[in-house]
Structure formats: C-alpha cells, structure tokens
Image (tube, rainbow, N blue to C red; front, side):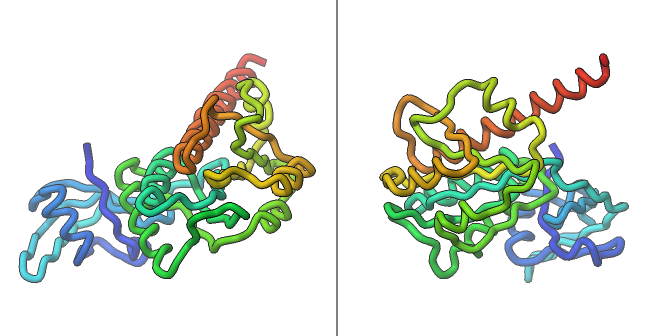
Length: 254
C-alpha cells in the first residue's frame, strides 16, 4: 500500500518538495520510509501527486521529495455535513477520525440545552491534525471543513434548497432502509444532526418536528454521541453508494 503524506503547499510546488517537522517525523519514524520509497502527497484540497523520497536528512529532520505530475480530484458528489454535540475528551478525536474515514465533508459542533462539552481554545487545531491523519489512512484527497460552533436554531434555519436532506439521529425515528434510501436519491447535501447523550429537550424535539427533517433510528439502545455520529454517517455513505449505483443501472437499462 502506498503511504500518503500531507503537503499543504502542493498547489504551488514544482517537481521538488521538502517535508519537515511533524510530517517528516511521521514519514521516517512512524512509517519507516527510506530513500527511494514511493509515496503519495496530498494537500487536502483535492490535489495529489506521486513522489519518490530522494533524500532524508536527520538533523534537523527533513524529507526531500521528487514529485511527478499532479492530479486534481473532483469534490465529492454529495456533501455530508455532520453537525453534532461534542462527546467528552478523547472521544471527540475518535468520532472525527471515524467519520472522516467514512466520507464526512464538513463538521460543525452544535450546542444543545443538555450539552456537556463545548469547543474550547485550540480545539480546531487539534481536530485538524486528526483530520489529516484520517485522510492519510482512508486516502481521501479532500479534507473535511471544520466550522465554528452553532446552536440548534442556526441549524434549523440552515439551507433548505432542493437537494438538501436533513437527517436527525433519534431512537424513535425511522428505521426502514427503503424510506431513508428514497430521501437520499436526489441529495446534493446531507445534513446530519446528532444530539447530546442526555438527549434532546422536549422543546428541541418539538422544534425539530416542525421542520423538514427525517428522524433516523440507529439502534434499540441509547448510543454515545460518537457511536451515533459514526453509525449515521456510515448509514448515509452506504445508502448513497447503493442508491447511486442503482440509479445508474436503471438509466442504463432504460
């Protein structure tokens, strides 16, 4: 398997580049890459390039790369925007790691009446490092965008254009796959909402019921925030893949 390395300045790089600091350490110490090894570099904005390690300088640690032609990948056909309460501590990074691997394109923390964690100083920098590592693991050329925290009212007043689908994780929601699949057939943006572990308040639940949202049941039990976020994202990405393949097959046989 070709290892991926992060090179944010790829767009302005010619045929040579240098990795330093964290990324150089990841390449040499974590991945044990050596001179002559072939890797893939990406910038998180859709660009990738094959590269060969031409030299490793140990003090200070630097990895010199010889780059081949760049390739630019189209943005995902459907944007998957996860808006979620924040779980406690390290579970935040676990959640972001998993949903990025599954195909999330945007993340927004949301504050509920019963939220126990809120984004703090330095949260976005920490999350960004997680997203980079997750993109390497899953070999995704587009890194998710992280947005500032909002409250539920802002989510409810969000875009309602054609092609926007709103799904809310809730134990009493819809569990029939056919209904969920039908709602995603023409989707261009899927907005996912995951509440806090204490659940939605009565007023929050009532406000969501007055909007064009589909409540989705993910389990008979009560899930932690990160489990619900991962389950809902996985359900959407798998359903989208299945519905798009089916749609293409139907058009081909028409």
